[in-house]
Amino acid sequence: MILHIATFRWRDDVTEEDVAELTTQLRDMAAGIPELRSYECGESLRLRPGGADFGVAAIVDDEAGLSAYLDSEAHAAVYERLLGRMIAERAAAQLPVGPGAAL
Image (cartoon, rainbow, N blue to C red; front, side, top):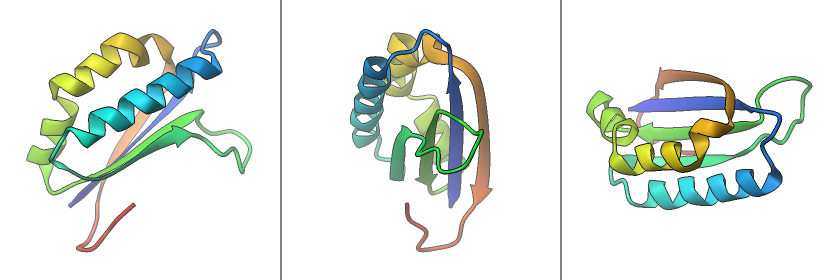
């Protein structure tokens, strides 16, 4: 299995309403993508200084599942509608995870 992690720093003009709408859209999107075994997204808790404003963590079975998620029309639509204009910086990583991993 693969854990995909993406973190974002927002542009200065991003509002709380933008973040709330994005969170709803991402959760709705994830519910419609069967390749996602587990999916979490949300605003950083800011428990330590620095870091990202928002994060996404998704678990898929394999590289094909990751591609199905990231290349899906639903993912592209969320990016086009909202996410793309919000991003100042983005970072991502994919990590191997063992059986039974969950978010």
